[in-house]
Amino acid sequence: MPTFLQDLGITREILSTAAVVLAVFIVSLAVSWYRRRKKIKEKEQHALRRMREEALDRALANPMGEEQAEPFEKMRRPFRVEYSQGDHGQEGGGSQGGMYQLTEITELSQRTYMFRCQEQTFIGEQFGTVTILPGTADPSQVQCEIFYYKKENYIKSTGKLEVLLKRKGKQAIVGLNGLKLHSGDRFYVGKASFQIDFLK
Image 1 (cartoon, rainbow, N blue to C red):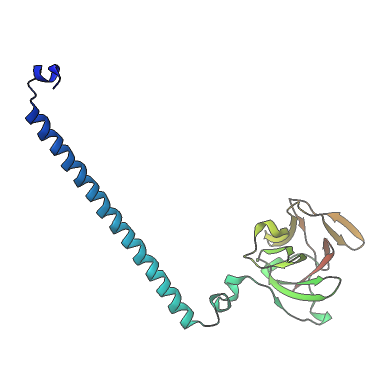
Image 2 (image 1 turned 180 degrees about the horizontal axis):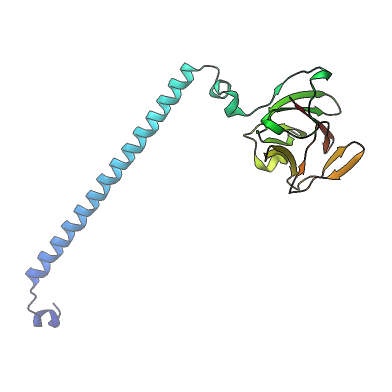
């Protein structure tokens, strides 16, 4: 036993007792940590089990799948419409918060969709072609967007691909700030072109 401990009056018995107390403290601390960790793990497993049960309940209640059950507002997908020539409307943009018809013209097909003027519409690449994207699309796919500002609709580019706007024989490059849209405007994104017509 070191002499400085003897000088302090610490005997072997005191050291042995301190060692035993320390060992008991360490063991109790380890047991407490183990129990706490076990409880946390049990809670996690219980939460995971509950999530699986809820998912199963939803699947049984909706066999078609959640995506198909979601309303149009949440999905934000365009829907196809057909209009006669007489239905085409205003000279300006989307005043009065009406609706607009967007015709997608590609090398192989022509499709017509309708949107609310206040609705943000994304156009970009999906599966190797330029098309109208759903609202849930990855931002990296978006090449340009139509947005609503002060009762008018504008188009702006994300800068990833050149977007060209044509109006009555004149044309302009669409930038990041946006250009005001008029009924009958046609814009080009890659090999696809889109015509916008505002409806009364």
